[in-house]
Image (cartoon, rainbow over all chains, first blue to last red):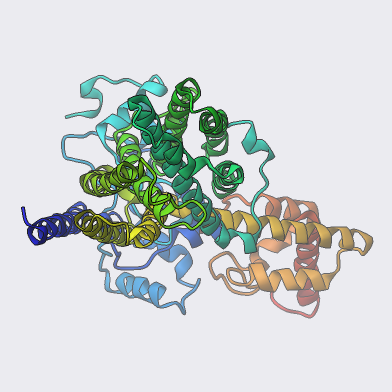
Length: 170
Length: 421
């Protein structure tokens, strides 16, 4: 093989590799873990600086399978008068006044065949951070756990929780 | 938690932004030196076993200078233990203790390699290389654990998560990049570095040059698929745009090294040794940066928590100083008014309900019970179901007393003036 052809082949190999790196990154789309929300709600302020307990806003987490995103009336309990000069709070107030729900983008989503209940995990003493990470340090919520079956099973085994298929699958 | 974590102090605020750079610097030094030493020692042992000559020269590449393995191998590793420990301060992972186990394996390995360089007996070199490989694998298993926080609550035993796929791929990628750096170091030190350059009539000169070039070129070709594989298996929260840029830089540098080495292979010269060696240093630097980027991506919240805890501990220190001062001076209404304006007035007014109730409606019951008011401020509970609960304000005893005194005094003064309670 001639010198020029071999050099070209090696450089082509690296160019294809470069393309593969970029394509793989785009395909895996890590940015999708932290979508931009319609209102830039910050857990750093509410759960971190103000020290509000998670149940202060997620009022159903201890008694329902869903943690539930707080209703606007919960937000407005404080924001009728607190931080009303902030643009993001004004967006919230507008939605409240127009009777229009804020269309939050779901960050922690599970496939339809998984049956997950928050209340059982909370009652078993699992800290929110185990599955959601350190929310009080997240200016924008991002998914930091894989939420894959292997990970769930590892934790169930470590804590002597049931591992029967039908416990978690429909 | 490991034993080392208990003696590590939290970082100070100005020190905090420096930590990732210090970790990157130390990791780059360690990975570069260890990689070169590992590959050149293995090459030296293989050449020595074949009896074709050149084993001393190859061993000398990484081990000739006795200070180098101390300054570039041992010290960066020891620094890394404490830097990583500080960076993950308070996180439920005993990273410093695990890194200290890496050091326990690496230190005898470096000593064994130094003995091998002196004697060139495989009885020292073989176990030393195995130990260094084991310690490097354990280093990557620790780094892998650091950038996968979801495994932290599941850590059991002294060797957690040692066989994760991403760890294996990281380890193999590092070995292949080390082959590139080792080959480039052979070319640089044996053919360019003035003090160590081989004489023209050296019998093993051609063989050593061929080994250097083949290692460098082969390493670049093998590294590429491994890099792509690693990008496919890294946990998603640790993958960031910075990592993509670093990977692009690594592939670009690999292509340049391959191009330079090919040119030298065709020419039969070593004219680009310096160029290739400098690029291979950059290569390992970018790889170390990608390791720290993975860590930073996975533990982005850790930096916010650290900053918050540092700020909180400084505030506590300040508050304890103020309390010490205030214990000599009785709590006064000025201090109470200041706290009221800073902490309470956003949610409370005397005459109207804001977020919380109007003081004039709730204070009458505390006029003869200041201790009750202090107990409420100390530990607020929800009383009125129609209003949100009051967050704990984190005041110290002197501040609580001062603000309670201010509220009651102000309320009584307003009432006496004829205001409407």
